[in-house]
Length: 256
Length: 371
Image (cartoon, rainbow over all chains, first blue to last red; front, side, top):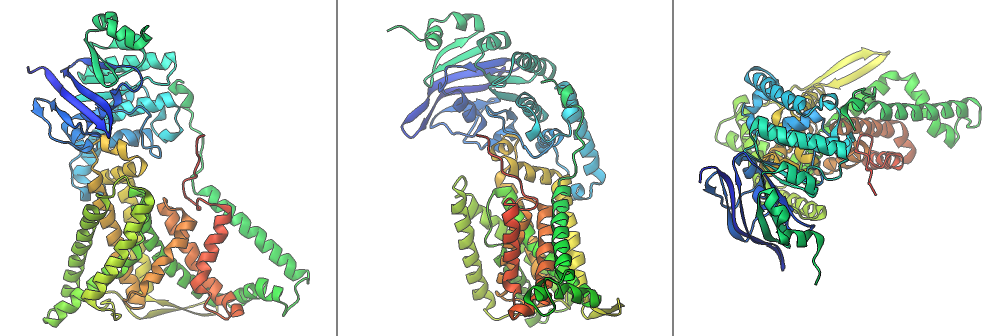
């Protein structure tokens, strides 16, 4: 099928004797918001790390844009069009918001390094062009006021927003968000929700996200996959998943 | 929190203002104490107190030309120390590795340059052109060294504890010494400064009622080192690759996730450190000679780094100048009291003194752990 952007087939991941993911398959369609949920330790972040190339599954395959991927490294995944954010924000703390997001443009800049050194000619045009794009993202995320602030000094909620901005700057085909709302208050969560929906609508970016807040997940996503102890226990549209007995058991516990 | 609350920027001082102000204040207090001691007669002439605290300063005031001469020599030495330290900082920032082999890389680069030129000369190809061909080839060798270090040392050891990587660079240092001695022999060589078009001779300036002699090679060293430092600063702050380098220094996984290849960045920093080593090697070599004895000079980078902080480029420069000037002043004015030759260890004492007050160095990142 042509509208499938990413397909995960029978993936298993082990760390020594620990099975983090066993035989999980699901797909992500072009243009949708796909949620991966599950209790703590269910293997959600491991799944993201497999897609992104930080981990390499021992079994199964990952097909991206119709091409079955060999073992990729994270930066190769990025070149391929996968961007991500991290559960515990991974920003360049010493650099400003603007610089952080500019780093996201690294892959899009091609002009020779010598031109850059002299800040002249084609490199300057290129820099300006990318700066413009970055400024648009900054506008979009409403972080104009903190453009020149080193991100290490920002509160957590804003750091998460900058991280989203950096991922957006890569103009990814697939955006992976690892708990984009963790540790946020209600107001920040609402903002973040709005941004995620807007990114999806405005840029048409396909998004796969991990989230714990069920209300948010059910509102936001087109389809949900549920993991428990590394296995897939449900997959489908939010209404169906919400009613699934396995999912209810996994989240609420089950009487034995 | 809304972004508006952060809209009013605090008028933060540039980061270097406070350390400099503090240093000036401390020096002021020391000067005041000395003046009081000497003028109040607590330390009469001829006493040890007078010899240590007063006599050197009186000498400085009476013979300002000598002071200028000493300061100049200190500055030149300091700039070269700064260059060596810069090589360390580059690699430490980008890969978190303390590169013990940086000092050897200086010697190795210089030896390669001289060795290549000698080989050319044996086949009748000499002069300026030959020197510059040798220089270009040496750059090629440094690039190959960077590529091999990345491939055979860093890549297999990625994610190992820092101490393992440190030991690996220690091994690299011994390897470079071995290879260098095998290929170029253990005897000291003369830097091809004439062929490279470096100036020689000296300029005599008649100032302050005396004469100050400036070696032309020292002036050239100062100018070239300054240009090099400016180029590196622009490279780090303004270019795409520089931004990527800073990104890698901050967070490996985030850098990877935006598509920066660590392997490529490591090659670039090791090559940059190699170029810095080559320039340093040429300059030191032109002032003395090229031998593995230069290695001990490279160790002077250690106190420079302790002073400046391992992660700061401006720190390496200021640290280098403080060590260079402090060392020469100490040797000239206080050295005779201890029988001379205090230059070899004074740098470490100065660094230790600073360490007591600022463990992270003058410009290093303050380490704050969240508990």
